[in-house]
Length: 369
Image 1 (tube, helix red, strand yellow):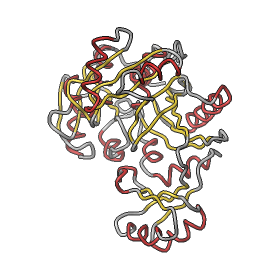
Image 2 (cartoon, one colour):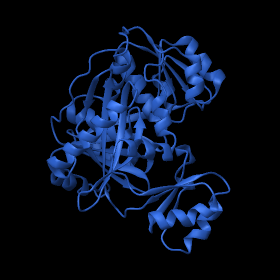
Image 3 (cartoon, helix red, strand yellow):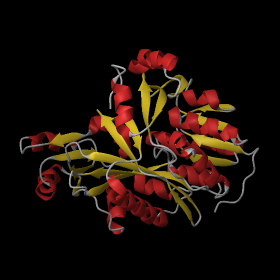
Image 4 (cartoon, one colour):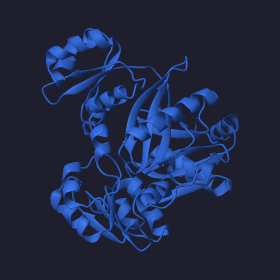
């Protein structure tokens, strides 16, 4: 467990956007002062900060300035320079450490990490040279997806291979960066679980089911579908991974599931995640408070589902419909952000079993699940 840090300390958050904004709000509720380092002026997280620093999250000078004025530091995703951050901070100041970044920044190393734990992952192969594409296809098969090894490469740099005709196009990508080829599942069910770790204490939240469209999260559902056996296996995997990771705080794990209920570990995330926003309204425990309690050395509560519900992230195109529902739905829990961030303007949570929620959403003629 981290050394106990009292309210009144100064928290530094590396990275901006909605995750940093929500973390900063929670930190202030816990009695902390907050400094946010984000890359652009006017970042939404600055609205919840006591002090704003504008600079790249990988820039040594910007990180040094953050370290000078904070008691404890955390990061909102893997897009940070772990070596620089370690060189500028003490173990007390950076209780999460940076070991998790070695797993989460590099897709190939993440697969190797999971293989070492005997986790079930989709077939994959490392692709460094154009000649590797053909070999990888022979190993992985069609369809397959080519992804940059560095996760910061983004969705735009990915490519789906369906036939041998796609191999030549894939070989052209190798001029820019190395890749990982992974077997492709068509429309699998997707699940996620948030895990909090502090010393030997591990708290695994109830798994949630996620619905995506065009790589964007459309909804998170609690409890997740698939039944008790699927939930138990997700929890088991989470505990095994948590035991191996040298880490303090909250992290997330995502899964694919086939119609035959075969689970595959999709990826690992450091810190709270957007799909974890469904936990606060359905369990009464915020993933952000769990994360901060771990960093501060405060005891971690158990996280249990209190009521079923669905959370929908709201985007600019949802604004008019959301305002309409806000005026007539007293039981829907809305949260709006002071400024759009990554296309998000807020969120809404609905409660009840899934058929009830689906019917309520479909009746709006805008929201659907």
